[in-house]
Image 1 (cartoon, rainbow, N blue to C red):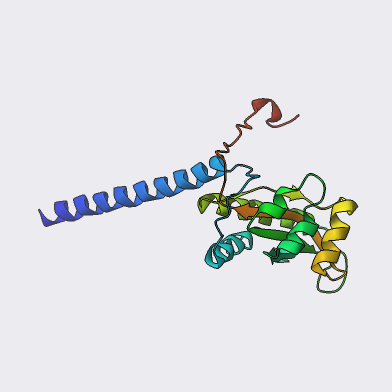
Image 2 (cartoon, rainbow, N blue to C red):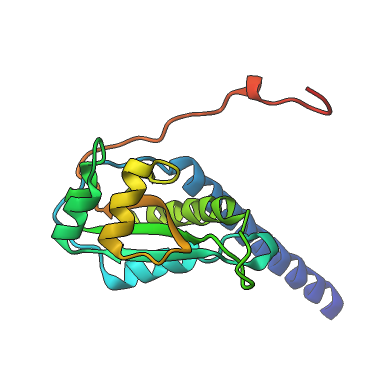
Length: 194
């Protein structure tokens, strides 16, 4: 009888753990599918704790040879945001917080790091997913490889020679009711061969 009770309890515990695991998996997928580009924000501030959580998530991204070339500049100063808001990126000036994802373009020996853009892309996606999970909004605005965007960014931020701006991400509380886009397209998938 005691063995039967132990087996029943062990089975129940396993079911609870599996349910929790399934819920965590679903939660992660829900967050991925809910991510959207948000271009308008309220005046409500983004807390330093939220910014730190976002940056921790960004730094949890995969990195080629674990070089972790990403560097981040967090901007709240309105004058700097105005400089960064070039061309169609006017939403940068209106966001409470702007994070510029940068990459170290050289390795420890000073040789070119050919993976920095891929690593920064992975880091940026993690950043955007963290923003979504926190109930905030953001949009990935391109910087690299456009010199007309990179040069003012380098100058405004005082970036060293081996640090290149990759993208600019304005972050805030969404002012509208933006919806995610369904980008699923089976025609983009090939199995075994093209």
